[in-house]
Image (cartoon, rainbow over all chains, first blue to last red; front, top):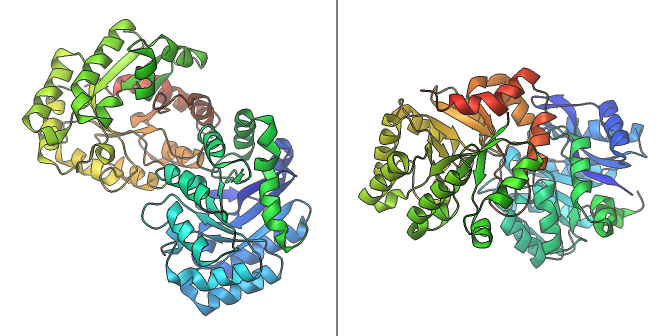
Length: 244
Length: 247
């Protein structure tokens, strides 16, 4: 199964991807499923609105779109309640964006949300690469505190923390890495260094062109690892909660 | 005409090819890239080898004068020696500009010697290309600060803010002597920069040469497939690079 590990649905500032446009691009790129996440504003403040949009879109296209959810940890118990609600209604991945949501990745503020994710076997995707508050070794800190929780280093720490990402992902069995913004010509090298069972293809459409990113990725991955990187690794994590 | 405004004569290339750019140029040929701003790597990585690398870049340029536009680098921590090496690059070696990587080289844009060199570059009509997009010494706003302090010198943001500071690069581009090379931001940021920034001060580049991996295929096609007016793409790829030196 091919899965795009990260796409953003919605229209706001630099985002302009509708559900129909995403499905069309997935068809063109021969991508079967896509994880969908809300725009930055809904990551930062309007969590419930964003989560409902994802759940609704995936409900309309259950064979193509897989909903994620988010909650800003600054909402405290409200954040946990919202994550529990969204996961209970079908969200398959928790998305955190420390830069946009305003916290440090390994801050205790986020622990209650991670407890929810761990209890429900929900993998956590973390946008990384922003110096100071979203780096790969901070993700390892979380992995050590929450054994059994799968954590995905979104963007491989690009630009400046790619070398940390390689060592961090090698260090922890729970830590995976997603390709978007890391660029296929670099990402393929990370896969070689860390191992093919941990890398995941994500386009981050519409910030990047979905079809272009998939074309470029397929150019650089060898035949023997395409299936794992382009969907099966992520599927393995997602199906800890049951079949997709 | 395509000019790649951000390439390096990388350490791995030097270690293997010993100052011979033929293999390096073949990669550019594969994509129809006509010319390249040639930056060093040893001179950014090793203070003790900077002058040697500057000389090497000049030698490489002589082997294919129509292909290379060389930029030298110096280390402000070297004080007067840095100033004299900057002059040697621009006055004796025929280099067209200077390149700094404050994060890698370890100095602040507030460094007094750097300031002196910025003034000299302005007097000699030599642009200065900075690595940018990385704290704590290489942020777009820090380069824009230099541009404000030295209005007679042209400054290039070598990465247009990379992935997380491109909005700061967009702000930096309000300063009239700041240029930006579209080498690092994602496609949507490139489209917004092309739409909202002063388009005559935008350049394109790939960072090719830092290692053996090939970023040109990706970065050229990323740019060509972006939602940018075709005439503007042409200017960014082939006209603006020459205007940078048109004082």
